[in-house]
Image (cartoon, rainbow, N blue to C red; front, side, top):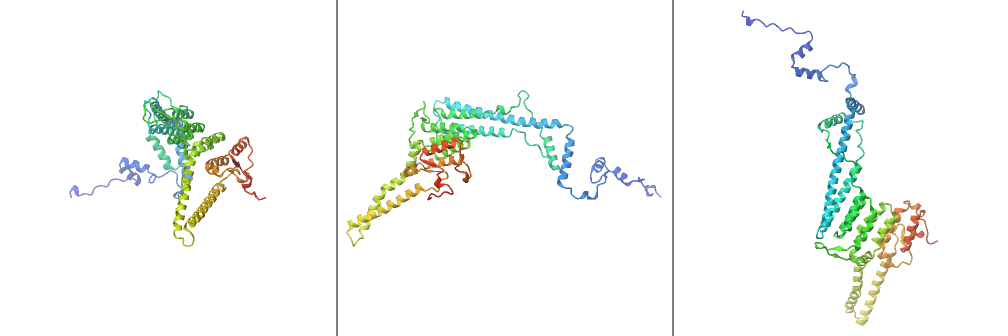
Length: 442
């Protein structure tokens, strides 16, 4: 028999089959198998209930504890990295804000030094960017306190992702030659308010309704509403520069003209700013510059009495034509007598109906809250000054008690001054006949 036909000798096998199986595997696979938590035998036997999912709080606390133990080697470095990152981000935002403010100041100087009067768009752009600077400064100040640390109860996935994020994002490097900027480097609100105030007071700046609206909004953001009455006065009295004129041509306006009236929405915003500031003197000053101004009264006469006056003037002619046409169909009496009788009858009916409607419009008290008209005030004055009464009613509601059952119990110098001021304007604050629970018949 040939040697090749002889059966091959079997390779000796170790006693432990597991050792033999591991020795035949490649090195990388052997390491993976030995490190796998599913294949490698553990030294501590898990209880049978380990297959049941553990409560979520327990898993979170275990993972958090493990992460805290891993960070014990370098606890201070992590805090320093976080603090450096926050300070660097705040410093970068402050630098960007200062650059934006410098650009705004350059635009203001360009408008001042321009040989001609710039258009309204350039002025609106400056105030809009100033408002943007103010909003960014407010955002930086609100985020200055350190952010809340990560809560202890976090999942294992969150811990892993936070660790990976810390490794992927290196620590932001700051310039070694310049120290990080703090909140003291931010432009103070007083400076921004003064910058805007001087800007609208310049002779080359046209103070239009849109510019005034942006200015009031900016001062509300800066919490500087005391500068608003001056802007309201300038809106009616400041000389108007002619756009594009070189050298600038100034037109002197008439403060009592209806064109110089403060728009109703801007007057409401100014009064809202004064109420938010809790300044009673400022609120009354705003009312004096808006609803009590002569321009407001003339504008009210044009808008509220213009069309009714035209209709009232055309009404007799329309009634006469109607009576003349109706007299043609009269067969019982003389046409002239019928025309005169029809004219007087229709005219009397229209006049009485309009009078009753006007009286009902000016004497109703369902829309008031605390301020009503004093008896004896002419009905036409009530109709023309209704916005003034509503503004004083709003002020009284803002400074008095909010509960209806406590109204009338206010006792302070400011409240008594407000009561006397309202009385001088022909109104009554908290009229007893109209208060809840009072019967005027007794």
